[in-house]
Amino acid sequence: MGSLQLENLNKAFGAVHVLHDIDLQIENGEFVVFVGPSGCGKSTLLRIIAGLEDVTSGSIAIGNRDVSALSPAERKIAMVFQSYALYPHMSVRKNLAFGLENLRFKRAEIESRINEAARMLAIEPYLDRKPKQLSGGQRQRVAIGRAIVREPDIFLFDEPLSNLDAALRVQTRAEITRLHRDIKTTMIYVTHDQVEAMTMADKIVVLRAGRIEQVGSPLELFDNPRNLFVAGFLGSPRMNILKGTITKGEDGTIAIDAGYGVSLPCLVDPAAVSPGQAVLAGIRPSHFTIADTGLPFEVQYHESLGTETYLYGNLQGEKEQIIVHQAGHFAPASGSVLKIMPAREKVHVFDPTTELALPRIASEGRG
Image (cartoon, rainbow, N blue to C red; front, top):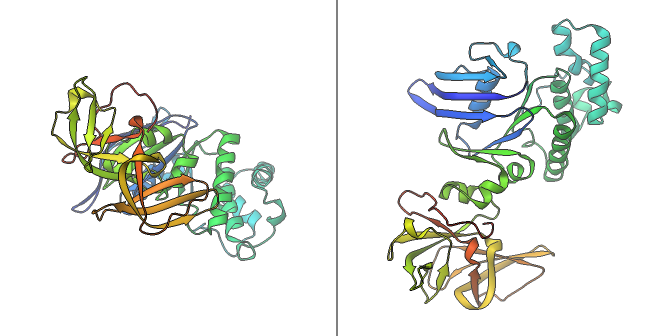
């Protein structure tokens, strides 16, 4: 069984504490992505799971086995590295066979596993080539194949696409997703790229400074970020953040005074706020609409992608950049002022001191 449980896991290198009280449950067959900025501890966490780094405290269980003290070979885990880690003097076939030969598998079993992995990854034509004769994408598939032939309980991927160009990243991302669908084995994948996280994961684990900020499905984290960090990290382009104060209507409805005589209705729980309270309103670029009345958005420049347009600018008199997404081709002149408004259910509200999301009333739409 490829389930994984981390309990109260900590890691320090000397006086430097890099992972803090990590508690995480991964179910058998899940595709889980660890995401976060450089230095957040995600690769260290992956290496600890693999057994390549010791834990300072805490426990690691795979299935029903505590593997905290076991060597990498005893954990039944296979890891795919960013650098491919192929033996340059060996053919693809020998690279795939090497680990199994060391484990003294019978030749017939080795050949069967190699042929099955080669078929799954479409690398059959390359089995007798050396790594230097392969493209970057082909080398990455061989590295994945070397993991597949071991038939592990868990696959670990450490930023496997970072050395590929943009087109190959998209292609290989799709191939890894298809592979997971076909073999249904637990996969844990590390990346700093939130697009990879959003498109590949069943579950995302967002890390910052060695701590887990939030765990959930891509849509859960996109629609209901726990704090400003998660809100800003997931979603491309980033979420817009506006300052405002809470107002309360005679009928009890809550809104945010965003200045310019504009009130932004929102779904924040009335019990969690009070009139005049300072808050931050988070609005994604795609959740603004151009309206007859609203916030005065001064366009600085635009990027047209044919089927969609991104407008970059600021609210009049402000310096903070605001990004607005529009479907189709739209080319307002630089310096023109548009009125923009979000729908009530698309406004996220954060406490500016704690940076935590304030509770919402029953959802009437996704954020």
